[in-house]
Structures are given as C-alpha cells and as structure tokens.
Image (cartoon, rainbow, N blue to C red; front, side):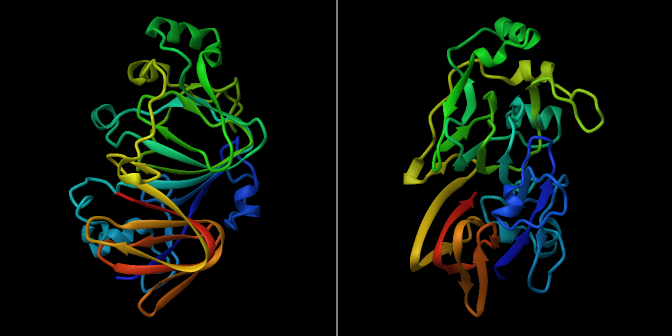
Length: 310
C-alpha cells in the first residue's frame, strides 16, 4: 500500500470562476472552473492516480484492482465508494436546491442520497449562503413561493466568513452565494433537485431544468439543525468525519487504521506527505488518498490541511 496523489476532474458550471486554477493550481484548460472533484469515484467525474505503479488509472479502477480492504472496515460492505470531496468557486449564485436522503435516493434514483458539509475557504465581505428556512412553513406555501418566484424571501440567509463550517443534512434547502470559495465533503452522490435558478439559461439557451415534484417530496420545511461534532471533530456524522490541521513547520503524525481510508486536501501553503520511503510534495490544491491500514504517516511544512474519513 502507498499514499496516492490524486488529479481532480473539473466542472465548468455557468456560475463558476477562475480561482481554482489561479490560486489552487488546478490544471484545467477551460474558461470556467466551478468545481474540482478532488476525491471521486463517481462516474460523473472520477479523479486519477498521479503516482506509483497505477499512475493514470482512475481511483475507482484502483479500488477495484486492490479490493475494498483499502477503504476500511466501515466501507467494505457499502455498495459504492462512500465520499466525494470538492473545491467549489462560486463567482455567481448557485441554484436554490435540495438533496434527498439515502432511503429516497436508493429507492428512486439507484444511488446514495447526499449529506454534505462546507468549510469556507474565502468569502467576499457580506457574502451570503442559504440554509433551511427562516421559520417553518407549510408544503402549500413552499409550492406557492416556488411558483411566484418568492422563495428567497423565506429561506434562511447566513452571512459567512473564512473558517466557517456549515452542515447540510438531506432535505435541507440550500444555496451557495456568489463570492464564496468552499471545500465540500459529501456522500458519493451527484443527486441535486434544483428548485429556483434565478431564471438562468444553460449552454443550450434553454432554462436549466428544475425538479419541483421531487423537491416537494424531500424538503424539510423547517429551520436548519446544528452541526454534529461528536468526539470534538470539526464535523462528525454517520457518513464522514472531517478535521483541519494548521502546521507551522512541525511534523504532524496521523494514523490510517483499518477502519477507514483517509483523504488529505491541502488548503494553504506547502509541505510534504510521507510514509516509509515515500515522500510526496504537497502544495495548495493538492489531494492525497491514504489507504486504510497504512498506519502512521506524517504531514510536514507550513500548511493547512483538511482530513476526511468515513
């Protein structure tokens, strides 16, 4: 087993900007880079192995070749790879949307639902995202406000700054606002039910598809819940545990036991990730897969890292 450096797949959604390329070193030839999927086995955007004997293969192919033991005991009985991690650059507002639960998604869509968390990497002064409703509303009012384009009057605005953490449970209506840069850890799902999109059109010149009927079935019409932080972690829920570490030149020892793989995303600075005779340089925007059971490994340098696991 070895530490893998990963190459992301990028998405050019119309609301995206250029910061992931310019500031995070993400390699993408297109004009807009809205999202970089830095940990992904999803068929809509797999990431690739950049080092070792399996260089050039997708992470999904790597897992298939080496077996689910590298994912850990918590994931070995899961039907799909459990996590998807992204960098998101919102130059413009994202649509107001909602994600379904596992029960709904597996029965209706054949894939996982989506629980997610956001770690705010940067935000313009006054930048706002939406999370849940200001006050509980009825399904009838929800449907009526969708029809008359007044939904944003009742969704809950949250003014954010760098370092803020937001937890989005399934069924929570939400939207990332313009001027916000985010690291997102979520279940491995690409299911989004778009409810309101500011009247925008897609590349084909037609209004982007909305998913009103499904959204009405899955949306929780209430205020947002609290952030689960069991065990003192930044976020810890049924699906993932996420922490950040800020290094100021020291060596940080971490451990990947047999229960779960780990993923490292470098948010700031430069350093290295090492295990045994393997030492990989790590700079802002770089991403690494740590197989379950690898044991102790180290991160050193002057950097901030986001570490996620099942």
